[in-house]
Image (cartoon, rainbow, N blue to C red; front, side):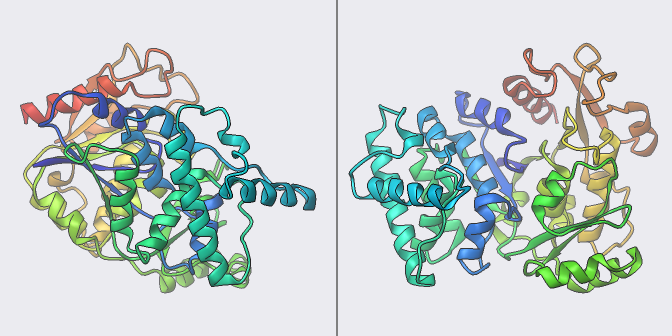
Length: 411
């Protein structure tokens, strides 16, 4: 049996790093990640591969957090330079050419002196991917601001004929991750894209907009669709009133089925952890997948929410907002059958204790414990010292891991 963690990219980094260093072999994790990311180089890779595969960025971030090789983590997080002019593009093309023909190192990798084998593997993956993309498109793509790890993962995708789970498994080997302790599962095998609407009616045309919106307005809804919105569709939707926007996006929405691997993992779970992260892109879209709500409900184990400590945007105002969102999206998975208050979806919520929770800070999420009890009286609210001693906006991975362990062991 294993613990299931619903995760985005960065939100559970400290927890995963703590588990990596933990000596216990009995406390294993299966991390469920969605592939909705479409920002920066991840979005470009999806386009170059014909919009037929998940976004890879969050899978990459989770895998790197699990890797015991710190230098490899840093290498794969490096980015190629940003191109702002014709001269910049010529320089980048020359730099890549010199790298893959063994004439010189990439500038962003020069300071890593102790990893020649890893660099050779990166070189082979970059060369393979460039040749494949040239074959597909008849030209070499602009790798401006591409993350090195995304290039490696994309190469593995192509080598595996876009079979995503096989690519994850190969990336695990590349990162020397302990497979007895960790695995990563794609939440669904269906390729989807995320769009959203603010309460004001403003369109969020892609996942990057959902994540990065910095307005004081809050998100009304998100929708999963089968292909990216075209520029014409974005223009037409933006010209509509809110009700008409909802009608159009409802017509476009296709909620995928949860993957069989995720169903099987949940059925054998020791615990289910709703991890910290950006709720509207990382957590909630996974919880609306067809079949996932009934599967979670059917398993008798602790179901634990780790509440974010800091606001990424103003869209998440309090711990109760996150709980409300979990029930709303799980209910959508159940075709809106109105079992919103079923206690089998969530049993525990971890919040900072009063010593470490500075609720007066405008950047920290409000831990509205009384309001949670009023709406969700069955939930065990676990107030614990889980905050980093160095940064009140971040969890201490070891403290959080031990808190989860205690909940699981005590039932």
